[in-house]
Length: 423
Image (tube, rainbow, N blue to C red):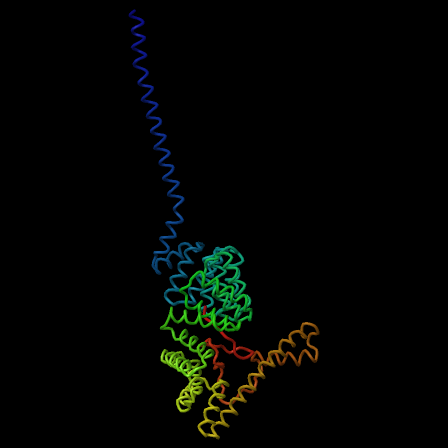
């Protein structure tokens, strides 16, 4: 019995010892696992922490970092951002170029390089960077959007439209890019495409007066004056302080005005547009409305002011000739008529040269420098400004021409005036 009791006591003593050892082992495993997780989290978050530190770093800190880490693209990217914020576009461009060399496919770097090069006046470099970004990141709405805006600003309307549509495929809810696509399509005379895009823009953001205004212009071109007037009213309601909306509304009302009361309402609207400093288009439209009211003296004053601001507008000289004739000033009427004819002939000459230039390019592709091709290529160089064209007296380089259209701003091109609309 004594031996059995001793064995029982021995068993009772050893069992708790094994249980305690097993518990300690499990605790150590838990601590080790927690330590491994902490290390993994630290290593995983290292790039994020470094990026946050670079973003918060000062210019001097980034400059020193670029010396310590000459092969770190993120250092040079943030250095470029800081330089750009300081207005140093040249050094910023160089920093972005270095970052792009180290990381050629970075969307952020390519976009920064493209936009900075464009601001610095390096258009070809900007185009190459932004195009590469869009090609490398075909599903990035930001890449396509930035390229579309750049192309629009540089008058590459067809490509701008294509990139805007590519943006909307990546982000169908982007109302501003739908607006850009609609404006580009309008300038390309694709009225159906313009209407579709601008209606999408208005549906996504009904409070965007720019989209309402642009849709009105497209509906005008589609000969839907009632729908266009509705858009202009809404745009003016949304942004009554913007002179452009007042001008468009006044011009649309002028198209529909028939009674003296309606014409007077037009006059008041356009007078308000002039007060809002819209400039030449408002002055021309107001002068035309005053002439409709047979208020010849006020029409004369308004139109003369318009002619002073834009002397190369055929439209304003035509209206002045009418007004002078009604006031009995025959000499002034003849002078304005001659000026109108001169400007119209000049515009027609440029249009004709533009057509010849396109034909010349065709013959050059087929026959090279044949006699016909050479002659027509000369016309092409004339239209592009390489060879001078006799300009009407008083014309100034870069002055452009205005036709009284509803855009408020028109630009000079190789074939006369083209409407523009800011996206």
